[in-house]
Image 1: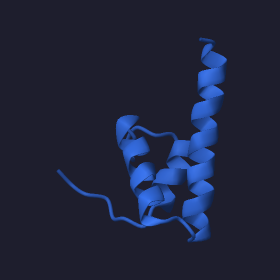
Image 2: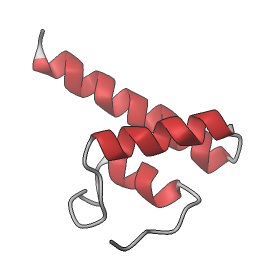
Image 3: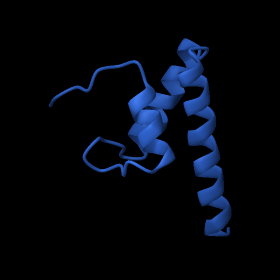
Amino acid sequence: MDTKILDELHDSVAKDLLQKVKSGEASASELSVATKFLKDNGAVHEVVTSESPMANLLEALPFEEMSH
């Protein structure tokens, strides 16, 4: 499969989840999906660049960062 297509799909999913979270209309299920999406992609504040859709989603989730 073309990596360009996968990259575009990945960005689209992140942007869609971000829009739902920012609007305040995300259901508990959608928040769970967003959290899992970030976790599955290794998204942590130290790794995600500030310009990426994942960073925007990570910042918009209504959860506090957990320390390990």
